[in-house]
Image (cartoon, rainbow, N blue to C red; front, top):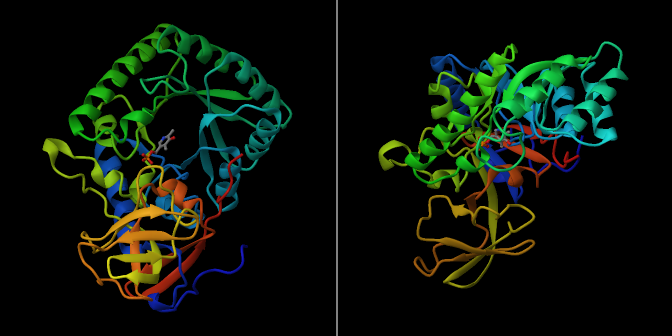
Length: 375
Ligand SMILES: *Cc1c(COP(=O)(O)O)cnc(C)c1O
């Protein structure tokens, strides 16, 4: 495995070298249990998205809590999860290209594998690749554009036509539809998210009616992320939820609202980038050792945990600049701070290891098994 971990199990938290990706085990476990319980209570399956953590140790904990499998976004990510012991993976994405399809088909000889499709030509290529692997079968979900305007066929007849082609293809099994509304997840107000999922529901309804008319059974209606899952769970239509970020949370998800404008606090912040203050040139400024190579800033700059009056104001390759003008001199040279990343998924992909801490001890140092698995 990858060398040079920033800590060893059993060490005190104070011995972790920085910058390091750290997860609080107690909060991680609570988040995993909370989502499992919410899915159970709604009577729907849970297939968490592994693109968030890319970590076999966390996937195994999600399975132990009742998840039916995991979602992956890329074929190589799915390979990493299967190698880490996950027996059931859905690539919740389109896969195009002979090499990727050959890898996906080979994976189907080792685990239960599903994939999304939104094009008849792509479907034919997938069927050819699966045909090359004796005994392999892949479950196909027809992806429907339910409002995000990204991948997916139009709802209704177009989805039926593609589903029919799946049902006729040897080696492929029509499993249902992928109905994920990505752009709804981070809408600030609950009312906006409800409106987006109501609109998605209408599109799913059209599609289910077309499939029923065409005589095709639709076993799975999959979708939902951390921002909207209560809506899909209560819809009576979606029956497999795919949230990912809930295990860690991030500063951007902490900004969305729950019902009635209350803060969305169903899940606790478990992921941090531990950083060291490496320079304090003036009392109003502190520089930490975590910049763009330790944190992603696409969804906003990180927050400084426990210091609402100190702002992380800019990131360069290896430096983060903190504005301490509201609390001059509050941070001393060598002091360590915990940063809450703006966006958890791309931040995790910057690290080889996740240091799992319980109280003041390092409990585990987990490899990020699918780090860099982007193909
Ligand atoms: C990213 C993603 C999710 C999970 O979304 P979160 O906001 O991280 O919970 C679910 N389904 C699909 C298809 C995704 O791409």
